[in-house]
Length: 417
Image (cartoon, rainbow, N blue to C red; front, side, top):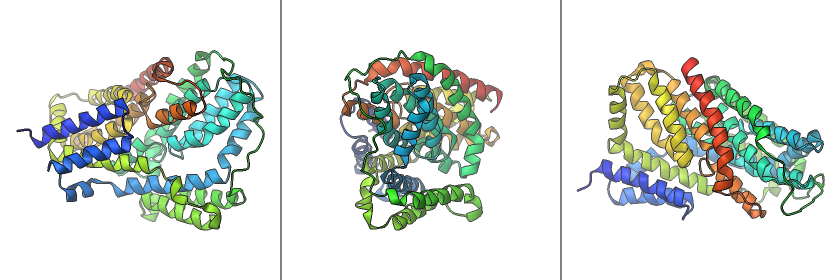
């Protein structure tokens, strides 16, 4: 008869198969696997519910609503308009402008949300210059994944790591702000010479400066910016205020809805329920892995190898390679209990293991089109507009970014961490 540990590992492998095959939405895949574990009595319903991190779910939910309100107010379209003005018709300059803009915004917003909100402006800018927008979109993906590495709220894996390590907003920036900047500079220096600027295959020419009229909350932009400012200040003062990041995000979303007034409409449509469902399923799966003793067994094995400082490098390389093959969210969720066990067995390791995990997830997430959620979203956006962005087209670009950032990440872990 199969043990609980074997069933949990089989469930993890099954989820990865579903994610790679892309036969179902990832939320249904994760929730289905979680439900199977409950039905097989690997984990009870009470244990499954207690394994769900409410703070992470609240943080994602609140930021989704607040960002949706800012999008309705036209904030991100205005960002894109300014970026096009700065580019002045030069493709390489347009690339750099959107790369920097995406990296900065991704530090404060979820990278998937950043891609969703900035991509319409990017498509309009590239089409207005009669250029193929796909190279610019791929650069935005890299910028979003690496820019999001630097802050607690910039990337879903960071939210998981920050919560697990009990890191405040400021502490997370102090830990990962510098490596994120180093990786971004490395890619920015090598990126522009990777592309040959090609004509738009659709021959679409639009007026990139025509302002659309679909922003029902345009008159509420300034109050919403005030709310966003308060939320960011609350994140910075989180330890002083004695509130969780999830409570701050929910409070900001609530205040944003109040100042927006009745024209918001169905605000719940701003929430990516699929992402939240995916996280719930992942939390239950990881809870089953812990309950079955899988995580503690692996931790004891690694600790017995007397790896010393090499352990951080193994975590960096392992998480980077695995994140290139599957979405980095389930990988990080599965790795967190492992790191906790290692720190419990050998507390002398310190925070470098968390740094290595976060860096590895971000680095590997850029390698393939399925490495991170932002990549998959960008692929869908391109295909919706009739552009080709498949696994084969993205791979040469992704591997170059992966190689550059992995070398820089290895040097950082070796020299600094």
